[in-house]
Length: 583
Image (cartoon, rainbow, N blue to C red):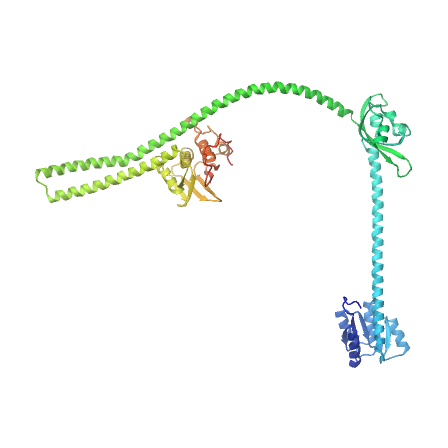
């Protein structure tokens, strides 16, 4: 027994417990696994559950007899060995059990257990041989079927290949030919008629050289093949049956014929007449094209020179217009400063004049010697109130001047520094209060107090100013109460700045052009069309960010600005970029 294999399982069906125990003990001592059943019913149940390798059964048992057990097992599993162990030695019982499929018959009492062991070993070996033989037969049948399928498929492939080859041979546009070593045509495709007007039958058996003339200085094809064994693109001149000249290219190889002892030449002939004519036509066209290119190059050089001069003039004009726009913005700022400061300063002057009059009256009473305690208290009260009011208005004027000064300095000096966005935006809005206070528009600034930017505040101030003025002039035209929203937040190491007004909005065609220089819908009302172009240049060049615009007519206009926390140190990065606003 192979020590690596599991021990065989033997089912013993015996109603005599002593015999059953002795058989089980003996077989277990010889490395068999033994299942025990005391009657036929229990034995069949164990067989169905465990499927043992061999069954030992008595004949005479209560209930289901050994013959019934034998018949049930052999009908369902004829390859499972069943050995009858019985005390009935009549020949008819032996014959009956063997006819029902018993593999052996052993008489009880068993005088020598070696007889039982030998019968078990012989039955198991026979079962193994039967199983191996069945497996081998099955494998052999599978191999025969597989090989039959392969041969059938191969035969089918050969037939298809032969059919395909015949179809290709008969319908190929190029001419396929075979010749012997002397150049006599053995086979040639029917397509030869297309380039020579000779039929296939007219050419078989004739020299291949009858079809063409060798070019001057060109070695004959057959001689070249004998030396090189393969020739490609061998050009020949062919005069067809109607005496029309055709140009052909031959590719051929020298090969051994597997069905004969000699060698042969196989090759193809391709008509290149049209290709050569087209090449000549292209050559003539190229010569003509080169002449036209030279003429066009001279014209383009002259036109390009004129365009360069026009572009330089345009740049100068654009620069002057941008400076004019900046001066106009500065003038607006000065007007706002004068208007805002005039109120607190005027109140301060009026109250100072009133205090001067009261002081003169108090001095007259004091000099006349008629000063009373009530006069002194009255003067002190007036002086205190007026002084407080003057100080309050002058402080307000001082705050306005400081704010205006900061904005003006930031707009005129491009010096990079760290500044808090929330406070800085409010300072800019304060400088624009002369424009905003005439309206009922609402301003919302949604920005964290600790959000800062290390950049150019002057450029940022100009961006805010131009956006607000754009909303006032265009977005809120004819609208008394609108809303402007500033939302700034940190997003992936950048400051995301969303500006939005709920004004008139714009059509899609205007959104596409909003950052273009000189584009305005207020041309007749004094608009220059440079405000948003300046915003684009400041954001993309000075602040190093990006800007895009979206809008829906009748609903809103919004700008999305992304700014790096720290832009490049040089605020001027070359020429104006191409305007490509996001839709």
